[in-house]
Image 1: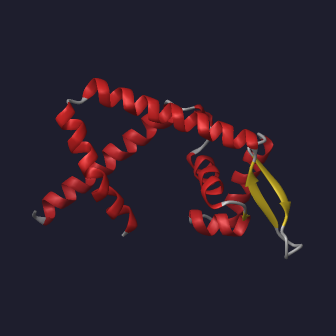
Image 2: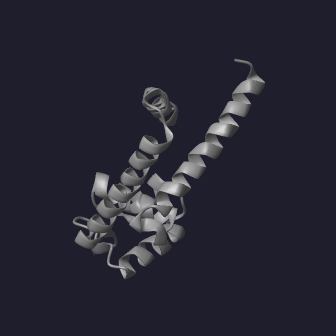
Amino acid sequence: MASQDREHTADELATAVALLSRRMRAASAEDSLTPSQVSVMSRLATSGPATTADLARDELVRPQSMRMTLSALEERGLVSRAPHSTDGRQVVFSLTEQGAAVRGSARRARRGWLTRAMEHELTAAEAQALADVIPLLRRLVRS
């Protein structure tokens, strides 16, 4: 594939992924949360409790921005803070039961919408072609 064709494909793929992401967010209970808030909740759910600095580093944002994100989540009861076990100057944030419930509900809503869309919009062959692309997309995001 020529370089120009790859650039066009990259542009089309980026646009399609962004639109898919927005559509899935709109289908979920998390639609009132920012993408940053959703990402932090996901990270806490999968990686466990973390400090503001750890989360900022993982999310590639400034600690000040992460503090604002965590503050908004804490206000809604979706995360809680506790003292760090070895460093009294730091606090550790965890996902609350309410946060886990919101996250679970949102995930089910997104997957439900996507499943229905695939059933109604794609033929069996197209659905299989889409499934066949998943390993390639995973490889791209690991690079």
